[in-house]
Length: 140
Length: 357
Image: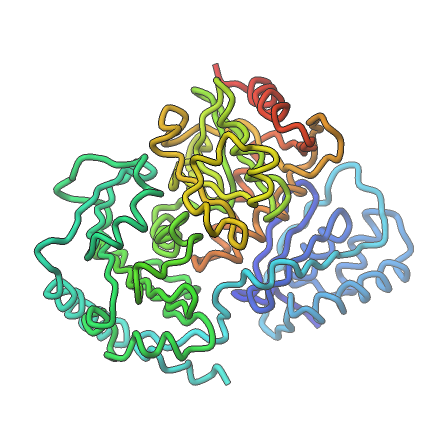
């Protein structure tokens, strides 16, 4: 199974070996440092858990079984917060750059919810181009 | 097909809005981020409420402004707004939350609309192709204090995004040729740091809550508002000399104290500064203010979340500029002490460390 970032509801950027992920759907935002950032780069880029695990195990010199278990746990969090979504589309896998001098630690992610009230417009409630105040048909 | 219809209806509606203008409207012009903005206020009350925050950026009138904003108020004027239904004003009162058109569609060329329910109760409309915008309030006299401190921010957010700038939730302080971007969520000392720097002889004030970030060349923070906000007890206990500048002294206890630093501190207000470092204030606990260098990721977390979630622009674009900005600056954590007199020298020291020559 392959996954991609749940765009446009989710945006993310990497700075200083840390990925910042923002969900425009929920107002929650996330920080995935060091190996967590590597996992985000791999899984949201279309690598399967097995492919990502292989790359990480080789790079860090860690048991594949352990890496796969850690990846599965973090993937479950990504899915729980709707940060990635499954895709059946053929993907050209991006090249992956591992940070220098990074040792393997169990990849993790911290969730923050203190900005939820600031989420000004819930995209689910956007309306058609000229239909205001009619709600989009697919808004539910 | 939908886009063509949209433009036709919207053009018609702008002309409809123009028919509503009264002869005694108030015209003000400003220079924000090097662009000329013309604002037509329908009433004196609107001008009195909204213009003070922008007064430090007043400029002579331009024949071809980069943006014209019509600011209206009242039930009658709502019938002339550029919306396909005439019940805009009624609808906004009944809607359970903000509503918008093309807010996160990713197409910067399409008109955007946002309706904010009470207590804000405003409608914002921007057509970037026509360089024209409309802001409607139900009642100028009921505009909340925080809106007076940072008026028209929805429009500025959209418009700056179209200019490849980011309407950023942050403060900026500068010297002649160098400056610091001060970031952080509310209540962490951002405003305290920025406003306390007004007492420094060397530091200039670019903005407190919002600045316009330009990372297309050297990173620059542009001023948008002359305002600042602080908790009332903070003003009374720590910065009593600013009490005469409080715009809302009767209500500042339940609100926050709102300042307009123009004209009282006009020599300290500058339209922009080149950024040479970024600062994340945290409450230090001790009397003194100290700093330490930290990774940019720590600052991006707060800056991105508070900026993006307040924005209705195309967010991945804004996030990219914020990331680019912090990646290009040395970043510091500022442990803000209880003695506010000791903050400005430390900020000066930080800026001096990275001064442009």
